[in-house]
Length: 347
Ligand code: DAH
Image (tube, rainbow, N blue to C red):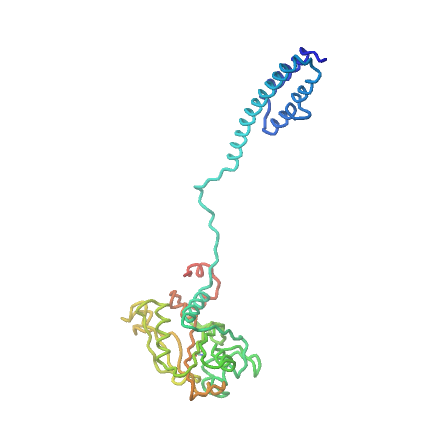
């Protein structure tokens, strides 16, 4: 039989050990280990005491059990208390170390934006798409036939001098105009046709308002009964969306081999409203694009019956629209990739 007094001493020693060491614990992890050494159901010193029960005289068992339970409960409370205290301290330290100053000003990240030419291109596509146009993108290398001949500009036609061409061979060239796309579309598709053809074009031309590479947007509508009125209606919608309500267009006679009649389209000056200013050179009008009624010969070249169908076409210089819209006076600014310029243009 176990002597009760020996067990009492053991209990006192346990209590003493806990009391003296508990305040030396420095972390919740240490508390956990320390607690385990007493309360682990198998190896804990207090749990071990319980196992002595069978070695005690039956009449003493109830008292002994009660004392061990009291010790166990007391120890549990002591450990909980220190655990809570240390956990709170640890949390506080963690908060301190992870503290962020939400009043600190943020580092500005450089954000890219679409190139102004792309912005205008997308805007034009959106406007025409809302009128039912589809996009056809041609190729930058073209044959002489698609770029000129089929567009009623055969070899030796004086209009070829209007565009200084980069030839790659007698047959191939860098397209000088997106008008070449008209032919591809009309060869493949039967009317009704309503397409836009945006893309890069190339000419040996270089000054403040011309660049050897620039971007055009061709428009072509072929159907029964198409007239210049349809053209004017569409272009009025276009300029109002780009340059604002109240802007209007005027058509002036011009010449392009692939249209008959041909027109030059002016927009009423969106700076002075038509009174005359520096931008419109006092005229109240600014030239923006070329257009016309598709020449019957061009329709016939593509196998479209020009008695049954008629068409309208227009060619917009995207850089020109962008320069007017954003007040840029030198086309080179659009191609020099100077972020100080490009960053300022974001619609
Ligand atoms: N292709 C012409 C140019 O580059 C622009 C143009 C004028 C296109 C009249 C057209 C048009 O479709 O009808 O100068």
